[in-house]
Length: 67
Image (cartoon, rainbow, N blue to C red):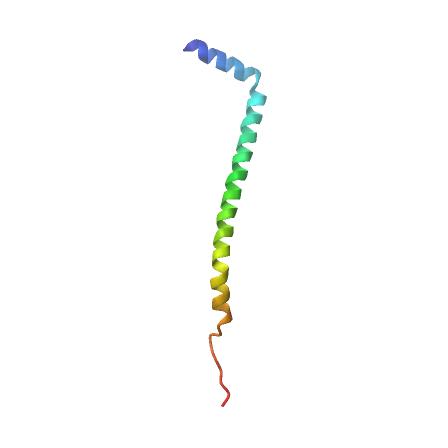
């Protein structure tokens, strides 16, 4: 098992820039996916809410009659 750790650490010492770039790229991609999912949820809620909001807005709260 010690040989595996030795090999892993030697690999990380020589290619740490490549590994950190890969981790950064994966993090940015994951963040974009999460942001798109959140935007889709908000948009779906907004689309569902608009008809009810328009129906409530078109009815007057007070009706005045002139007699």
